[in-house]
Structure formats: structure tokens, C-alpha cells
Image (cartoon, rainbow, N blue to C red; front, side, top):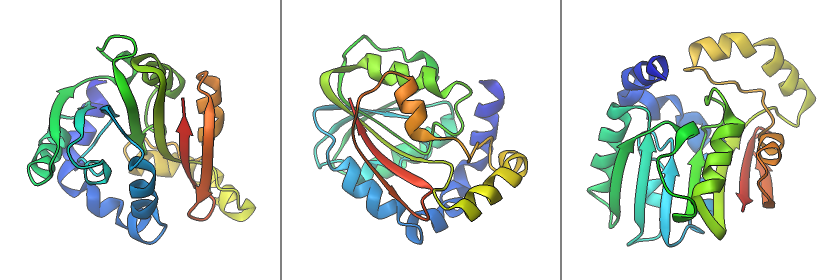
Length: 201
């Protein structure tokens, strides 16, 4: 946990430049807005990073945002100041969420399972704190559906992991979600077959 905290504290101020291509060329920003507009009630944003999700939540939402990195949370709070959101932030490990069962109506997380040491445990925690009938909204990346690109990911997985804050870019997000016992309501693939927008419960 400590090493990951240090890595993300260090890259917080330039994180959004690092994901610009994914956001605006591969369609992440558009899909993020479309997916997270479904959030309602009490919202928990897990591994919120610099708060890229905040602008996609409905105006007036009550949001709790957690992340390992204090610096990431500082940037997220600056964003929230310009939005009509009630935001609370807290340093927290996604694999050990310090909330009661069923506390939230919607749980969201984007581009996170690739860096969690135990993504299945983190997803189980998201399910635990989401009320029965609530929504779990995930935007994740993984192994491309295009064979040539999937082969490239496999050949370069170690280098990518070392250069991108421990990101494992050849995982299968849908399999992780299923392994955690979540029910997939809807999923959509986009961005060269790398990204998944997932609605689960």
C-alpha cells in the first residue's frame, strides 16, 4: 500500500496528461460521461484519482471519494469546488473499504482494477458496500479484442507495468467482475477493443 501511495502522490500533478490520449482519442471521456450519468443517490467513487469522474455525476450528487493518494485527493477536491457536488474524501485501501454493508446506492470506479494488487477482493468490497438493487459502474481497460493488439500487450506487459504505475493492461475486466460475484447487467467494449463500460449489481 505504501509504495502505491508514493507512486500516485508523485504523478498526481501530471496524471491527466498521461491519460489524455485514452480520454479524447480512444473515447474514454465520452463513455465516462455516458456511464456515470446513471449514478444516483449516495455515490462512492473508489480509487477516484484526480477526480476525473466528478464532472460526470448528476448535479447535486452526494459523493464520497476514496483513494490511496493524498495528493490525488487534493486535486480531486479542487475540481469539486467548481462543481455542484457534496464531496467527502478519505484515504482508503479499495481492498478494505471502511464502510458498512449496503451503505451506498451507487459505487463507481474507473481504470482501477488494473492496478489493485487483488482486484477481485476490491470488487467484492464494492459489492459489499453497495445496497441490494444498487449499481456498480466500472470503466476499465484490458486485453484487446483485436489479436494483433492483444499480442502487442502481452509482449510488452512488463515494460508497461514498470512505466505506468503498476498497470496490468492485459487483464480481462469482465472475468474479474464475474470472479468477484458481481452480476453484469450490461457491458460495452470500445477504444480498439481495450476498454469496457460495465454496469453491474
